[in-house]
Amino acid sequence: MQQFDIVIVGAGTAGLTAAIYALRAGKTVLVTESESFGGQITSSPRVENYPGIAQISGSEFADNLVSQAMELGADVELERVIKIVDG
Image (tube, rainbow, N blue to C red; front, side):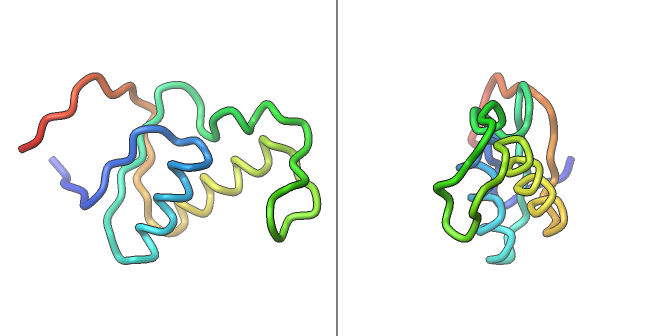
């Protein structure tokens, strides 16, 4: 069983951003999501209030976050977390 420095439950904007920063800090990261990657922003037809991005669809924004996290080395799993055990 592979061990990770950080396990992030939820692959919305916050979870994926946390993964990117952790990976840049040299940590190993597992991101889990029970439904679909990107969270609520994926249903937004247009995002215009994000620094550095004039306009983008929510689904494209989420796809970019997932791609960036994976390119940096995140392990991403579509799994439902039912229990956390401190071991």
